[in-house]
Image 1 (cartoon, rainbow, N blue to C red):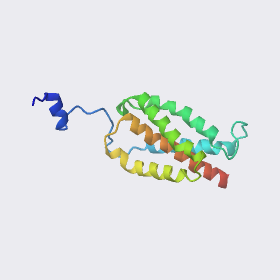
Image 2 (cartoon, rainbow, N blue to C red):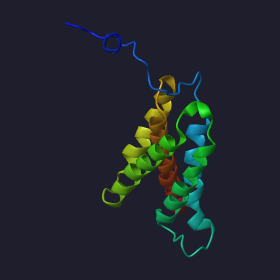
Image 3 (tube, rainbow, N blue to C red):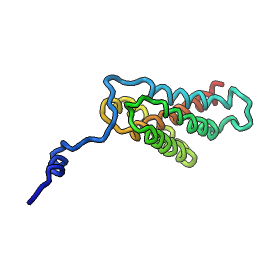
Image 4 (cartoon, rainbow, N blue to C red):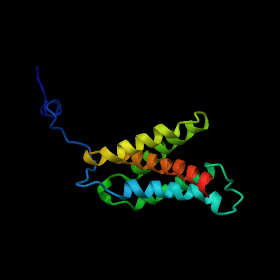
Length: 154
């Protein structure tokens, strides 16, 4: 049986790997920035009297965070494809937010998943889309925690 060298290399695990990012130490910005942005925007309806930001609703803050995710175009080039990073962020934000409209306790698995990923994701080599999923779940986790904080403490 004839085997080309490319298929043999792929079989042996020596094929060219896709570009991803692996950090040497835990990065702070993908953990802190999205969750802080979500937290602050969830508190906005309680701090301002803007008609489009009703208290008790996370829809307008979610829109602000989704629009603000375009700032990921400014991320370092080592992350990889920036459109792929933003797409991963938007997909994760929709998966983390839309079920909350039906399942009241959906925020619990979202926050736990984000925390688990924050502990382990930086140790491996992942593509930009996967990093975007981590960032999106962090932003929506911040929305949920900020909404809780604002409702009970502001």
